[in-house]
Length: 218
Length: 218
Image (cartoon, rainbow over all chains, first blue to last red; front, side):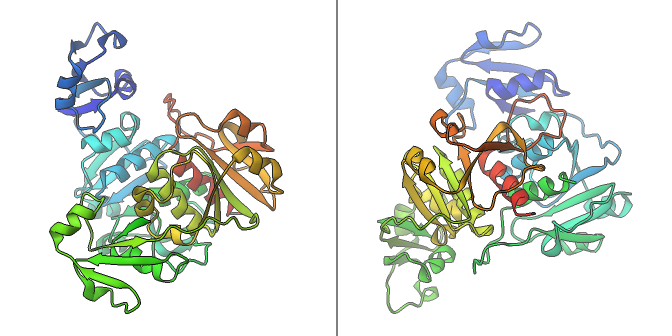
């Protein structure tokens, strides 16, 4: 099972493929659902259950969904070892914004049922299909064009988007694995405009947002 | 005074306008600077000083800089009540990436010397000039074209960037203030591509990244 916190996100579960076992709420009036068990709890009880520093109003206990990969879609994200739950949540939210309905993850990508991922995705996890698999096998077999992201890739402003593509995002510290890089058609990158001598790159979720914003402009 | 944590960011201070009073380090060998007092401290002492859950190697105690507004630059960010330190840090980092050298903040925008802002900016605060002022006065007097951001603005993909512009980003919950909106030439927004019924918008720093990525594509 996994937890979803806060009425706002919990309400997005009602019309999703996720099934709720029960809800524990400090304000059960607001969740008037006859088909789901809602138990009234105190603020103190919520505090003990919640993963959040500042608990919200309710906690829903949900069933894990059986993982099911759909056919490859025209644009998909592929995550090669994303570790930070906040980054994964943000990437799921981005995918939802841009209408990307499936994300393929390497087996060592952080679990999307992690409470921090669920909260950072702001309910978007209900609309994006998450698949965990062996990336080398997947990338070798897909008909989509595999496009990586790194600091030395083709300028995104000049890049011609293929009709069917996977956009591959690498690990926060190490980028994509060499085995993944071998299966790429090419890589793209965001040019740096500042004169900054900093060696810092953009955070992976921010880079994903800027790249998707550009891909969808065409 | 304010704190900067971690040798990586501390080293970016050396070539900046910020002056260091002293450094406390668990590994002073790595910071071989004869002009700055570096004191060797234990891991336990660092733990007591640090604002981070997982303290890094060193803490630098720095002098606040006198605030000084430079002339309006061709592209500036204007922040109308950004509250979250992580968002401000991320926005400073974005500005640095895109070579935006000045950010104008409303007086109620979170203090950029807040340790969470400093850490989230990853050293970019040393390269972006931060000015706090009365926004109504500033926006009324500037020669830059004031362009806001909201959910109903002109599609960014069709927007023609003026030569000199301020991009105004509003508060996380409430957006721009009405007094600010009155001083806008127009607003722009990122179209939503998904069919999502979610009412969620993108996080303000992510929206800033996608908009800047698009503005700089032209």
